[in-house]
Image (tube, rainbow, N blue to C red):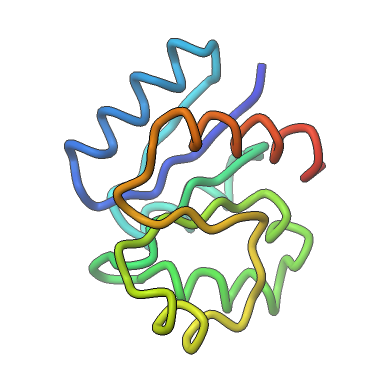
Length: 122
């Protein structure tokens, strides 16, 4: 079964994305911030990580930079979501994840990108 980690500080978005992905028969775990996500990534292998950029504690930008330096193959498993402007994202994001979805995103677009990531990102 495909393992997905959702890293999102907004509980409503976390619940919605979890519910939709579970309905599609994905095994889903969640993290409320980057610190929790790093701990989960250290002990569990995920096929896809859906990563919000703007979070407390350890944000998505820092997570991407750390992964790019230490585990660059992980970047092909990461789908970034962000409400930040495209200019801010381009300016701050040195590491290149699998895909970037602007918030608010269409749930069907998210499902499509997750399926592509599962097939292409491994």
